[in-house]
Length: 316
Ligand SMILES: [Zn+2]
Image (cartoon, rainbow, N blue to C red; front, side, top):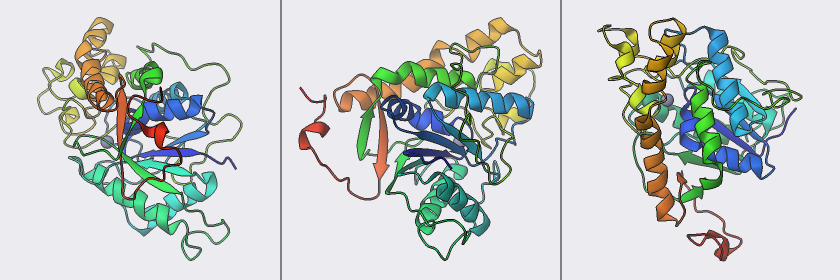
């Protein structure tokens, strides 16, 4: 068993990295045990082998310093949040026993994200009830569940200063561009699951690229400018990537020889994509007096032990 301090849960591979990758990297650098759970394998994505997809998610997690990574099979593009999915998530929560859970927001453009929010909130509560889930596992309820921001903006309850770990977040996002472009290789001995093993109660092992249905690559959500409208799907009207799994499409296109490496660099690793993600971080960062921030929402008030520690701009 591998107890975690922080568990980040995302509906699809890359949701966590985009929404709270900096916060995870910061927690890991502060000595916290951080884990990532993807509720789907991005299986609606039509390209790339399961092995490639697993490698991408593992590399992203390693870039953030996560010590655990797992997947559930809740249904990409039609995410299920019923009792079986709750039980599967309860098993993960009781295995890793995280103090804090970071999950998707209440309201978002993608229905999978809203369903993911409900699933995470329900499972986090029910996991504390002995009457639910496996009777052989001790009940465990995380102390708090915070929501990271995805497509829709919200008034944040708090913003985390991720300035010092921004490059780690960028490295995690770069991992989803496939093996053709990996600016940061995972450090030796830092492979996910080494030591603690990988908890994958339902369908674990096979990873997937983000497979949001109806994703059109709006800046600020997922693949940003690398989704629809990216030239990598040019000449293929009606290609499934337009509706499903458009995130990071260029990378797997490149693997299959549809575009050249130079195209990959100019599209997927484009300055526009980086600016879109960075722009939001700079906006929320400046609200708290730092360069780059990640916003979060909490349903309940936060407990403050040191009033000066939460002053915008940090302690002077
Ligand atoms: Zn998503």
